[in-house]
Length: 321
Image (cartoon, rainbow, N blue to C red; front, side, top):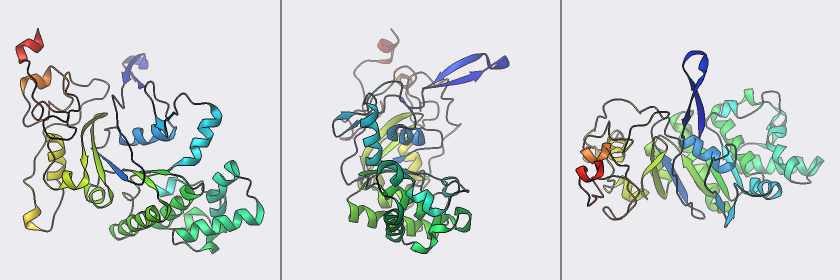
């Protein structure tokens, strides 16, 4: 939850729930894709999981341990297990630091490696991501975006993590370079048995790399399913269907009828009553503006937060009363 200032002299503050009621599992060695429009809370979710943002309530469980209320030592140990690769490779590095300093910084904090041993480990990490060890004493501005993202991945691998949060890792790159980075991530996942939380607005990339997909809208999860099911006709939430309809396809048979959503994403500081999506939903019912749907398996066989998919027994009049 964040405070948002408004009014004359910014005296009035509103509470913004960037994430609200998020409940998800990440399974070992899988890739969980997180998709949704800009502002839906994807990046906030990733930063909260790795501890850059403290949640106002709830739990983050890792191997059964609650990291929100863990001791300082436990959190430091957790920092070795989960790393993050950020969206913009150009802002991921201090321009004053050489590559060896950037890559070896986690090793200096969490290990006793120093001198020749530290340099050797840094070279190994760079070679694992397809970069020559000879670049150690160069600076970030000397490399392309794709090369810098490889170096960022090398840094994330430094402490042999179990989970890597990938926040739009290819969105700032050319299409051909995107494919190279995705292939690299998949190779590394198989080699080191990694688990990925893959955040992206590019559904084509998510389809290619993810085992399961979580769809978010205005800080809430609206649908979860396997990647295969989501992209092959078993997406049931109207918002998920609208996102998929915007995916380009060169194959005529795979082109979907485009669903145009009216309006824009509501203000997170003043969300609509009932279902957050109902002001833009093409199939909204009266109940959608009154009650908030919950993730429910009953209608579609997988979690969907929608009254159209999961009808409730009470009438609209009863809900008003």
